[in-house]
Image (cartoon, rainbow, N blue to C red; front, side, top):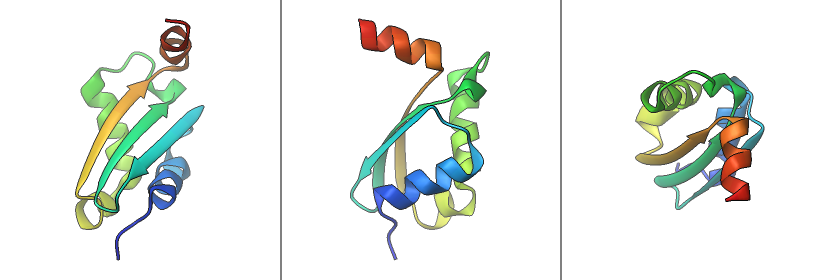
Length: 82
């Protein structure tokens, strides 16, 4: 069974506190905007690892591809003003 974008969103929210989380996709390929204070001081790779950890086994079993934009709350605020 392929997960819906809402299910992927719920999986991430269960393990990662997010200020904003948007997930779109077709059941196998997903795009996500993840805004979390947990990303403060982390590299892009470390941020993606946090999201992958939140998805856990589901990433290997159900989600074929996940494209992410990971931002801190301050980065997100600056991006919205630009």
